[in-house]
Image 1 (cartoon, one colour):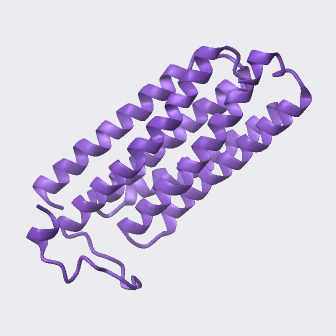
Image 2: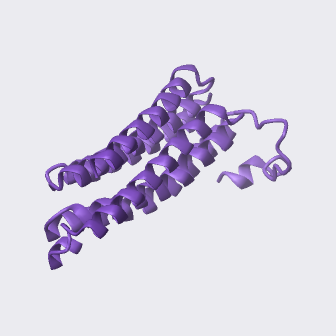
Length: 124
Length: 86
């Protein structure tokens, strides 16, 4: 993006891009640790969907500062849009399938609203 | 820039290692689907770091394709679990 105006070789651009990339990769690591440590499927899904989405946005913006050409920037914007559209939908479908197929909720869970719900009404 | 991208690759590798451990030992099928989805997201992030390191736009289309394939795979397996159970 900055490359279009010819600023991608400035040191400031490289520093900003490096900070964004390291922060995004830290969020990716956080997602991995969360998926390994959390007790049930729903908590793991939370850890696998939210932090890596923000991390992907940070990494992509960091790459946008360094990639030259308008075509690359367009593809990176497309990646962000695709992740924002698909990650919640996929997580919702997996959560519904897991709950319906009898995956156990952890004992530490405080609120389980689907417990008192009538299954045929909840899942038409 | 080289230092930052090296650090990013190391962090992503550690995260992918934890995700792989969950993928191997996850008790239910939904756990494995979640882990696979996260692994593909980490792969997309790794390609982004690589393209920021080299400044080329050769691999960017791979990011789009991997993100789409990951979503389709997750949706398909979710529907499969819903129909079959467990």
